[in-house]
Image (cartoon, one colour):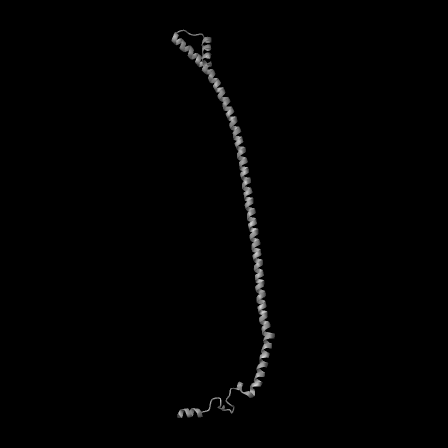
Length: 186
């Protein structure tokens, strides 16, 4: 029980006085200084609010506005670059299509020229061959006529020799010619 009594007799921290002679309560909670502290708090808050509203927030707003403007500028530049790239792609595709069309036209023209050249060469060769064939036919006809003339002579001579050898009589040349003509006629 002695300990409970000794504890009850000891003063609390709030009741003790500071060594400098001040009371032991926390200064902001003292009633004598509360009003002046509240005024200074309000004045400090208003001063900080005014400083932030006039200096800090405009700077931050300016920075945010600059960032937004830069972003919008970058987006606009990107749109312009995209439009330029799309235009360049369209131009490239158009020039590629034009080049293909020109190449096809050149190929068709070259093919037509080659076809015409081949056709002209074919006609020339055909004419040359027809001329050679005609000359060969003339040569053949001449050779045949000469051969036929020689055949009649050979046939006449052979027939006369055969008749002479078989019968021992020499036939008349007119009779042999008539017999050979009649035999070759039929």
